[in-house]
Length: 157
Image: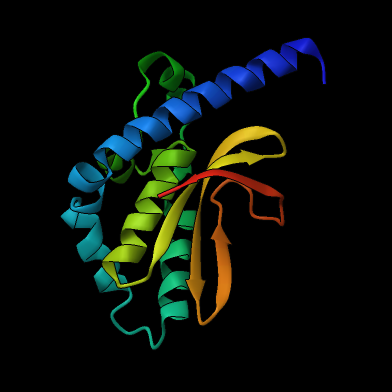
């Protein structure tokens, strides 16, 4: 790995860890007990689902098809800092990995599915994704990386 790539990777990791720290501080107050609009929507779209797995599939399909990665926010985030912004991602239908993963976790929890926001690295780059266990099987949902990857988790919320 070249020095330039190493420096960029270190800077991105610092931003992700800063965002994770901010998120951890506000998790109960702002993110776990919030965003009723997306919670009601999650309940609505999963109303006819017969199992937790069906609910998981419906919500992750919705996120994949309707929420886009926000490259402009990705550029601005290192300057502004902060954790995920559920209002931003819900209202604009776009966000960075931590926004999208946090929204996915929130919607899954709103329908009774235990889910964790994971922050760490994928292929050596900072990233956020969702982990959940349904019927004894662990599922990883990653909006940006839909193939099997090696996830190195630093924090779980």
